[in-house]
Length: 207
Image 1 (tube, rainbow, N blue to C red):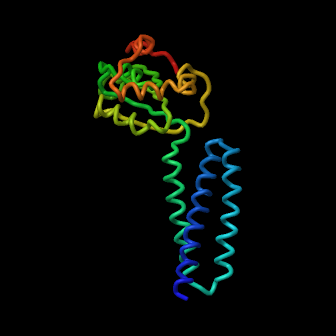
Image 2: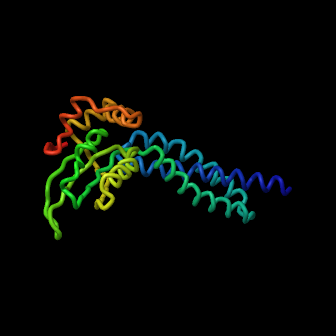
Image 3: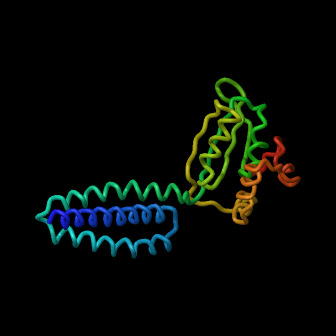
């Protein structure tokens, strides 16, 4: 009897974790404009939801089943969010303000394959170098590490753009060139002549 009750609790817990994980991913995919992928995920989501809810409704007199359902719901939100973070869908835009405009910031970032638009600005304490950097989310943490290595005092603001259109950098990403640049840099490779021409500090071309 105890064994059967334990198995029922485990089944309800696992089913609800899977259901809410899929539900969380579906909402995130919808917000990112991946409507067809979201619709595909929702088909599996609703089937699992009906199975889990049916088990609970058939055994409402068992309090442990309700607790397992609630616990699985909470864990599912965490699991779904973690999965989305690992998938790292979409792009991230990072605005950086450096207090030292003489740092060869833009060249170093462009050599690593990031799309950078830079300009000089004036802050309360003097000249500033401002940069807008676009990168796939999978390289977001690596970008932060690179920025902090170049200028530990740099001011960083990041946000996720809703729509991206045009620009030479987007075409490079779609062709896989940014991935190749990261691989070359991780292996200690040197930038090509084309990259070096793009990476001039005074070149402030738009993305």
